[in-house]
Image (cartoon, rainbow, N blue to C red; front, side):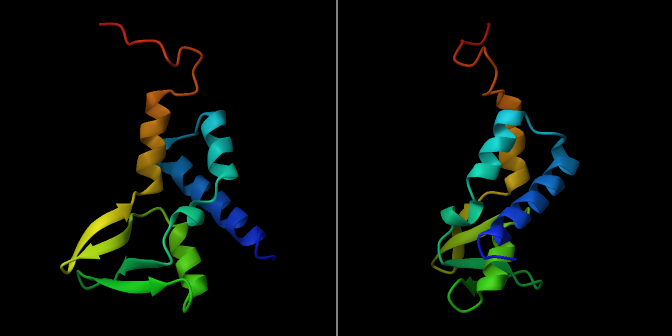
Length: 116
């Protein structure tokens, strides 16, 4: 499998997992997720849960397969630590996609003010 195909295959797998949790995505949202690879928005160094209540670093330069695999899991990824605590993360894809689906941004009525 080519390097370009790896994110596509992983993205397809992620979308299948998300669909099991949140149901089918609106077509426009599905197309957007497929068109924009998640890994492009992650820093080279992320922190993964270590299974003991903490985190361990995962560096794209030293463990590229693990880093890419983590990029397409349905879990939040810590992207920054400050004073030994996680202070920033890439959100869990299913949560973000559920919020976007519920916002109905692809509806023709998008831009209309909600009725009060």
